[in-house]
Each structure stands twice: as structure tokens, then as C-alpha cells.
Amino acid sequence: MSTRRLLLPVLLLTVGFSLGCNSFVQNPGHYDLDYTEIFLDDCGLLPPKDPPSLWDGSLLITGQVVRMDFELLEMQLVGRFLASGEKFAVDGSVANAEVPINGQTCLLDQVSVHLEGDTVCATQFRGVLRVRYEARRPDSCVCEVRARFNAVQDGLRCE
Image 1 (cartoon, rainbow, N blue to C red):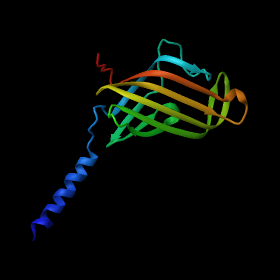
Image 2 (image 1 turned 30 degrees about the vertical axis):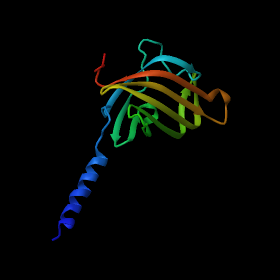
Image 3 (image 1 turned 120 degrees about the vertical axis):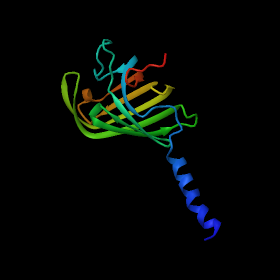
Image 4 (image 1 turned 60 degrees about the vertical axis):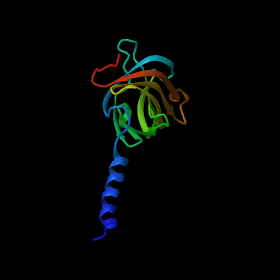
């Protein structure tokens, strides 16, 4: 058997393993998200500052692809790390969701979420979150939440 034929499987395995390896600092796993600043809450979704809790999420990182199982409507957000390797963005949406908004039940055409995260350390990231509730009617069901947040894994802050 030629040397070339023997080296080809080794080369393919090496390339395959390197593509699947996570070279980013951020740990995968469950994170508790707490808001640090509310820019907008038309929906009345966020609780008062004590506790400042948002929805939790679980990160799965494969190469540059980032997935988050997000607590709000059991949504899955998908995105990727940006060029710097410390920032990532994920998006997701759900159609035909029935949710309470400001004391009334609304059937929404779509709920969309956009989350941008910036790695602080392996167990913490911070960023901004936007949740949009979209409905044809009534107008009182159309709203948006925008907030700055901090996410911590297992209570292990970097500071």
C-alpha cells in the first residue's frame, strides 16, 4: 500500500476533528439570564428589579455555530460566533403562540427573539436581547422588549 493511501485517512481524521473542536472560551451548558437594564417593555413581560430574572437558556456550541434552547416558549435560537470569536448572535422565532400580554391573552402571528452575547469568561457572557410579539390584531398585542442582560453559568461569575 502506498504512503499516500495510508496518510489520506489520517489527514481526513485530523481535519474532521479540528472542524468539530470548540476553540471558543464560552462554555456550553445552562445559563441564568438576569437583566441589568430595560430599554423597552411594551409587553409587561419583565418582572420588577427584584429578582431581575429573564428567561434561562442552554448553549450548545459546535465549531462556530451557537444554539440556545431558550426558555421563552421553548424556542431554539441559532446563530454563530462573529469574527472576533468573543461575540456571538443567535435568532429564533415561533409562530401562532398564545401568550398573556398586559392582562389579556393574545394569539400572535409570530414571536421573534434576537440575542447578542459578548464573552466575559468561560462561565459568563453579557449582551442585549430583543423580543418582538407580532399580531395582525388587536394592536394591544403588538409589543417589544429590549434589555441588556448578564448570563452566568452555575453561579460562577468571573469577577
